[in-house]
Amino acid sequence: MTQVQATGAQLIQQVRVLDAITQSDRVADVLVQDGVVTEIAPSITVIPASAKMLTGQGKILLPGLVDLYSHSGEPGNESRETLESLLAAGQAGGFTRLGILPNTEPAIDHSAMVEKLLVRRDSIARENPSLPHLYPWGALTQGAQGQQMVELAELAEAAIAGFADGRAIQNPLLVQRLLQYLKPLGKPVALYSCDRNLRDSGVAREGPFSLIYGLVGDPASSETAALAALLECVAEVSTPVHLMRLSTARGVELVQQAKERGLPVTASTTWMHLLFSAKDLGGYDPSLRLSPPLGNPEDQAALIEGVKAGVVDAIAIDHTPHTYEDKTVGFPSAPPGAIGLELALGILWDTFVVNGDWSPLTLLQALSTNPAACWGQTPPTIQPQQPAEIILFDPAATWTASLATLRSLSANTPWLGKEISGRVVRTWVPPLESPITYSPTH
Image (cartoon, rainbow, N blue to C red; front, side, top):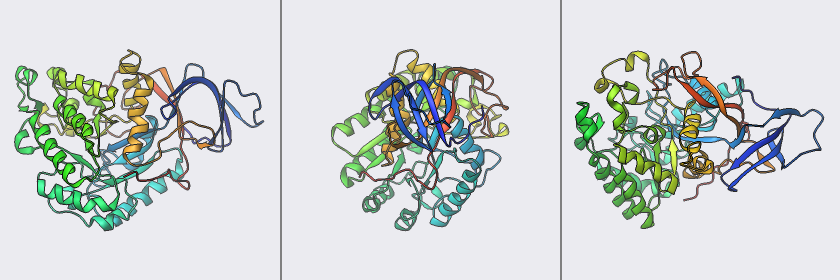
């Protein structure tokens, strides 16, 4: 499906309009003129003569999706993913804002690297203006290696989404110092909790299925012990923190307790941890080798309920491309991660909304509204006189994930060769000259 930046006027007729900001779900005509939603009404009769008519029946108009963190192969591993292919995958999946983690080669740990990345993004966007806006995270530590902190104040002046290493920092004193130094800078901070000593060589969440499948277990405490220590640091320092990659039932409980205590935390899980559990590892599919590992069924159930209840604020894609050669090894030896930017919306919609587990607005909040809020950004919305940061989604469209249809350069996904329901058919993205509002909330 070819997607182009919409210019001029378009009238989307009798489309289902979902907006989590206004909690609305209705059928309406929507008029977009020169990148702005100018009118939403049950029926629009005064139409610009040049307007292009788009049939909305059976389709859904959504605010653009926001991915808090994914991985780019560029720089350093362009055979896995380039910025062009990453942004194209995000566009195909309905993402209008895309965060990338700093653990590239070299890492995004100084302002010159940020500037170089954004110049590259701008050159790509000139060729295809409907690509997502790119938001690089700046590393917390040099090389994102968790050893020595970067020049935080200098990097904070660059156009970064916030600070994150994307890897777990093992030194609690360094974490505490980072939170102290970061507090006055007012930038979002995202941390991943994992005690590598407790994890040891584990590749599957410890429990009955790791035993049945003969996989070395990674205990839930590798997440929860590190998470509990981090939350104590947050309680002491009061720096707002986003908790990445929540994967255990106890982790959800700890986050809920932290929020009840009034700690300034938000949390996300990845889409794969909502769809699979350790029970699904019997086929030893290397695309299900993730970090953190897939939880046991009770962990999966707690994450699903956590999203529904709002304890887990956001769903991140954590798109992690690997080449065929990278992943064509035994399960324990495979590098962790899977792609997902162009797959997630349709599969999550089909799994949780169609089956009635979540309302459409619950999914939209977790994929769009809340991730933007975690960044301190104005969330996408569909309202008159607002920029058209919207996507047209056909939940009934089917397509097969293949090397020919995927925009990503990598194909490490358990859905390769399978039919998928739901596809984004058109995207509207505000131009880079009119950047998406950033207004820190902390």
